[in-house]
Image (cartoon, rainbow, N blue to C red):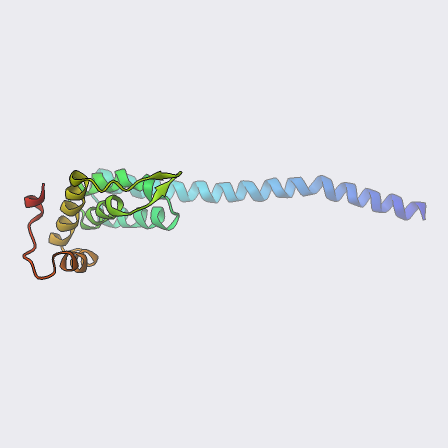
Length: 154
């Protein structure tokens, strides 16, 4: 009986000693995958912002939006919209400026006249550049009125 207890005790000790090693190994694999993912997205952002690549911008924007990190993506969208006239980026800037959200209990929606004009400018610019989701939004906003040019807004 004493021998069985000793074997069980030894087995439990070995199991407990190996468990943290397995756990650490799993965590490091998760971190490595995450770091690889971040590296890929960073590469896409570099290609988008340095070369004006709209496809790379789309890959990066999907990542940030699906990971619910879109507030971090606002600056990248603004650069792509202003520097390269990327229709999707103009649309994202519009969305970021008009979305009524809270981040860390801070109301991010402004609603002031200047921000409203900026958001409309970006929506209209996206519309003018042929971005499909913007088209319906613009038609809904202006209904039976003449749609202004983006340049007329600011």
